[in-house]
Image 1 (cartoon, helix red, strand yellow):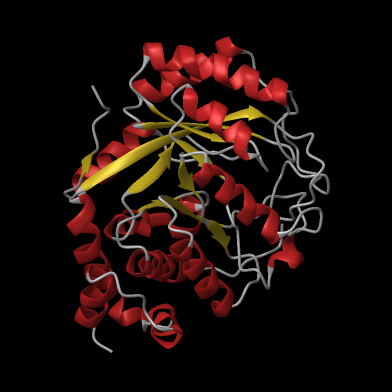
Image 2: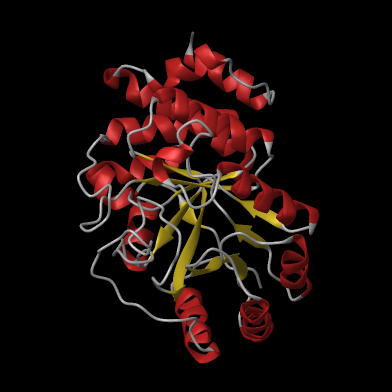
Length: 325
């Protein structure tokens, strides 16, 4: 299998076979640059050299009844994190201002918990209405399991995306969470699509899954036609069940991003949580496959600040995607 073969298939929007997908993940490390250039040829066709910056706001921290093993905010976590309820509108507006100042295109408000109450939706609706009046930002909301009716209310006030990650394959899902199912997550994604919103859904690698699981997750987001795909790399947090998980290398992370790009040629792909920890000095190379990154940290862990991200992007010959006028 040649690298040009991968490019041709992706640009024709033809899915790789399972065997071809595994070959991507098993690419010898000394052929990494050729693989990245192939992914870049696909990425460039849809997104050129632009990089979309996104900023996360931890709108509600901890206090979650779910037992997601990777998460510092889950019911089984003993991580030392801040605990607080849904932030007031003023604090969420301040976050939007900081996102705008960082030249982020998208502002993502994330609230821990199984799913939003109607009161939560009321609060987010009121807040987003004011944000849209002040800043030309794309808005993404992540509040857990969500009904179609709740998603429709968000769309009415200008929310563009709802995030709800599949996280891993159907097979492996019970190994990382038992308080809800893989199908619960798929249903939320379908509810979001039915409401007319764009979907944001990806997963986490490095939790002990197999290459088969990674391949199946990449196919799942393709089959669901996900618009925006965050690829997270496990950042093992002390106090969580996965605190000792150390399965990733920078090269494996880059191969995973390339696989997602070949299988999802026109979707946004975001090098998301754990990028800095797992890729280290190689993180700029993620931009050959991914067209988006988070800046200014994650929910309970720090990350690359916006100024450093701007330098990294420009030094590689890419450009920050401008905020809409």
